[in-house]
Amino acid sequence: MDWATILDIALKFVAITIAFTVVLLIVAYTVLAERRVLAFIQGRLGPNRVGYGGMLQPFADLLKFILKEDIVPDKSTRFIYFLAPVIATMAALMTMIVYPFGPETRIPLINVTLPLSIARFDVALLYVLGVTSVGVYGIMLAGWSSNNKYSLMGGLRSSAQMISYELALGLSLIGVVLLAGTLDLQKIVEMQSGWHGFKWFVFFQPLGFIIYIIAAIAETNRVPFDLPEAETELVAGFHTEYSAMKFALFFLAEYINMFTVSMLAATLFWGGWNVPFIDLVFARGSFMFGFLSILGFLFKVCVFLFAYIWIRGTLPRFRFDQLMNFGWKFLLPVALLNIFLTATILTFFDVI
Amino acid sequence: MLVLLFILFAGLAIGCAIAVVAQRNPLYCAISLIGVFISLACLYVMLAAPFIAAVQVIVYAGAIMVLVVFVIMLLNVEQEERRRSRLGFLVPVAVVLAAILIAEATFIIWFVDRSPVRTLSNVSDTGLTSSIGSALLTKYLLPFEITSILLLMAIVGAMTLARRIKEIPPGAAVVPGAQVLPLHMFDPTIALDDTRAVEAHGSDEVAEVLGVPDDHDPTKRD
Image (cartoon, rainbow over all chains, first blue to last red; front, side, top):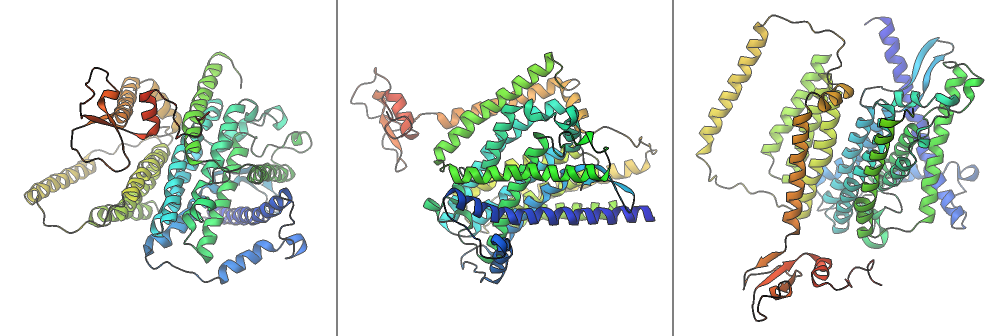
């Protein structure tokens, strides 16, 4: 190995560390934001005592999770009971590596041009879908191994729901793939840099975007699709028997999933790191351009996260048959219609 | 480096495959099978076929195995007991088949070693998504279409099996909670005192057959 390779690996390592730290910090503060925004919607105050305006609350929560007693049910299937939260968190974290946080940027001081993403490959979009579908096992196995009927019902509901909505989710992305002609997320973002960074695919794929958002909320088991943990029916669903740090891992996985799903929405539909009109001020590839791009990307993600919380504070929960009917009889045909329309228009008109 | 990764994933695949057959608990078998699929996907990535790898994870690990695990959990299959093998006569057959397989593999390895080395160009688009897509829709269009018709037939077949209104022989045991209707409700030519009956699936189907509004579905209630 020569020095260039070692430097390359070291830089990658630093990039991965920074990316994961920043993302996990944002995830931690999403929890706080959720509690504060929900409190605002419901006319309460929310946690505001730890640190300035509750800013240290996530760390207090973490400390509490670590210090709590870890109770393992007597009749649980030990190995799988321990494995389930690990699978859930790992699958949630693994999708993060393919998203482009920014364009290729020249870093000052060391004078190296770096792509602002962790990994790049040809089938990035399929990779995201694949890893997401593996994440279902975390919830299913948690429900089964706890040896509790509420957990089992939660796990079964969750797997049925995720299989059903994965179809609509995958099909809603095909419109974007048809437009871009590639599965590589970086190329998809590059294609949206036209019109001074405002040629976002959401303008070409409004229907696909709406389907994606609905299916994504169902995929992450959030209100109004949170039947796997419907507390009025199932105590706490699949994580009823989990306590302390193992519960925290499920909690973390849910919020990381929210984050990655929002990143995918921002990447595919809202132009990724493209911030409109900054190319008029800064040259592409310069440090400021890269920095503002990252900020713009994270801002878009935060807008989606806020929408998630807003929806949670506003909408009631579905009934299970409504959920299934909506997924299979409405969302799936509409997604197919969207593919048909996109393909027809692309055949006859030169849109892109 | 590549060899190390190959040994890691190949070993993982073989280990998980052995666990699939050796485990007694069906859920552990299913989890081991998922392990096999994921290690195979890693091997595909190393063979520069990322599309196949991704599809392997999405279709096999993500969809089919979820269904398998779902069924195991739903039926709550008990741990299989170690029972006296009824099919003992198959053991020698299995040994012979395994010997043939190993001989074939050895022959292939030996043959590849002996054949003159062909250098492939470093840049190849085989295995990339666009090349697979265009090959499927041009060169291999007919097999592709036939496969999709086969899948469609499987779906239609499954639907037919699931939706069929079964005729119950008189005196047959019926699962508690099943809707049982006398046959003359469906067919006016059958005499009223005929004891034959059919089993319907769900109150909505009964309501549909009888042509009455379904009171059990709150969404259809006026």
